[in-house]
Amino acid sequence: MRDRLVSFTGLALMVALILATVEIAAYFYSTYLARRYGILFYLPQITEDYATYAARVNPRLGWPSSQALQKQQDDMIAMASAPGTDLTKIDREFPISAYGDSFTAGFGVKPEYAWSNVLGRMLGCHIANYGIPGYGTDQAYLRFHDNNQDGAKIVLFGVLSENIQRNVNQLRNFLIPSSQCQTKPRFVLDNQGHVQFVPLPKLTAQNYEDFIQNPDHYLSHDYFVPGGPSGAQKLEFPYTWSILKAHKFFYDRYVLGYKSYLQFYLPHHPSQAFPLTLAIIKQCISEVQKRGKHPIVLVFPTDEDFRVYHRHFVYAPLIHALKREHIEYIDLGTEILKRLGSRSYMELFLGGQYHHFNENGNKLVARILFDYFKAKRYLPVSVQETATLPPG
Image 1 (cartoon, rainbow, N blue to C red):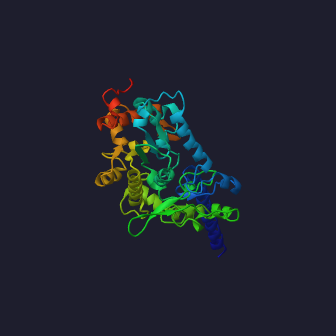
Image 2: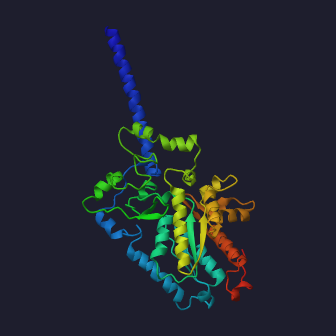
């Protein structure tokens, strides 16, 4: 009897040791994932206090502050009219504006090497670039919608392939960990397929800390909210159970083979990300046309899109939909492939933690747009026959 008791005690200790080891391993693994990626496990890493958040947040767009947006607006106007900017009458004949995220903004290189400024020098006109890093298609559209000072004749609406995730998200910290509290608006589709605006969550000094710890209590329209349909989980004890509850993510990626944001382009995905993104684009295009302007959608690829490329890009459903809806677009990924030749796509990207175009990538984007404008005869008559690309 005593031998049995000793044996049982030893077995229990061994099981406890194994479970403790598994739990410790689960803790370190899940914490690593949460701190590195954020999209699978939510671990509150926001250190910004409410006063700082309230002073920084844009109540309409999320970020940057209203003051920063106004400064961007003033800088665009000043740049177009400043003495010695070497802009001719072409500038008045061919003004262009651009909206989108960091790829539209030309993030990661000096301003003079950003594609819009390179293209502006090629065309001899000013391009007002209103791109804001981190923006979803929704925020980019709202930026245009609210900008009554845009006098451009042609509006370039930048859509980055991974924006499709941002369009069903309201707390960017779910996607990319940050010390800031990065809230944003979004749109949802009603029963008729029309977009309906969902504003930022109403945060106060009283509920701010609770929001950080329990965002699921405030964000009913965020697909990535912990415990929601995405499979993302709040990182908490027991950590092994947190990992098990996140099985949907692992199943989608390693069993179904969905890479990155591919699944969000599926027409019947539960997030409705694809039909929503298309609806936002259509709404924006309609407004651009009602203002008497010429809209063109610029579809930007990421380095990830080139890495997983197989006969077509991940965002191919969007290209097919734009074509079906008779929306003018430029598929920059396909156009880049035509010009790559034997070169690696990585020669066009910064690499490392930044996945944006480098100077060569920005220059190639500018050349693609220049060729497109000339082929479509969108250049002013005074430039159409004489405009040529600079060497290199």
